[in-house]
Length: 230
Length: 264
Ligand code: SF4
Ligand code: SF4
Image (cartoon, rainbow over all chains, first blue to last red; front, side):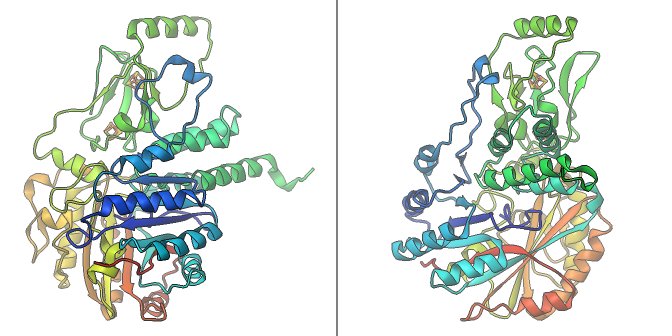
């Protein structure tokens, strides 16, 4: 389960995934109840996404749309649905776009003493700093050493930055390229494109705030060709 | 995965959605079709796309009319208008494609969702990787490139050759017929999957040897390999791997930080 380990990019200042997970056969007896509490506590700190590895995130595909969706798609962010659908031991994850929310959330988790393992996936220095601000030293650490082998088979940087936010590979390079083009053409807003991408991430760990920043950054670059600023 | 030829209206929405590029419009049939050799049964199309249940004949008529007047309809990009994407019944060995590609499927050998174990995420409870030890997660096929088991076997055999002991609860280990040599079952070697993870641990001083071997073998595979390495920190939160990785020339930015709040 390395689905957030290898996100591609240089800056992760707006990307923090906090996980709760039980150890199978050791402390998974009442894990579902503790996981629901974890998600409920998280909601106070305004996460940009959250999900459960079995049932998906707050952005969910719909199986019974009617044609009006093509003119006015209502983006439903189903926080309640995520909390209610946790029914057995799983991994639950919450995504934040700022470290202050992470620190306050972790402080409350310390007090709540859920018994589950809690991890921060993100920049290693930023995560250590968050832990310290919450009064903790890290117990264990896992490093992403990046990609080996035929890396020329991967996509360009901007596609990778967006696509790897679903570490399970559910967000194809093709769909990312299409949506980035549509944003450039003004056919969709960055928020709409990020919402579409997020629906393919079946654990709810896609970070729509970071996606919007990345797409806006690309748009800004396009608008200043040749270094002319005015 | 298959596409219901009675329902498909050849809108093309599902084509970029497929991580393996396995869907294309057959221009003779004027329908989308799945290349079953390339399809890894990941369900990104079936589960990730939203669906309408429109009448295919009506939709085809409207599309023809718009085409005559060279009008372009700007539909939502992740919608199949006629719910034409249909999962296949999978039998052995093809079923391993789904087990290693669809993140929602619980792998029977581990009981956990996904392609590996809980690895370092529950290390505060399991104490699987101790002080002075390094845990590895070597993942094949990500991001969104895919991998054949025959390529994974090249790596498992090479790692076995330097004395690695594979993590018993990992799904790839479960596919081995000989854990001492890293030999996988013959009947899955020609199955393609979205990604798989090989896990093991060594003493921290062996990290350079292992990573060099992984790097060498990766160059011979027709896929991408992503590498994670973990350890337990001391009471001040310091990691023995910092110095070793820097000496080996690795730069790292992100990772997972276990906060030590779990308990039995
Ligand atoms: S999205 Fe549906 S209707 Fe459109 S090409 Fe794919 S299967 Fe056919
Ligand atoms: S199941 Fe996955 S690989 Fe197969 S056609 Fe659908 S998206 Fe492509």
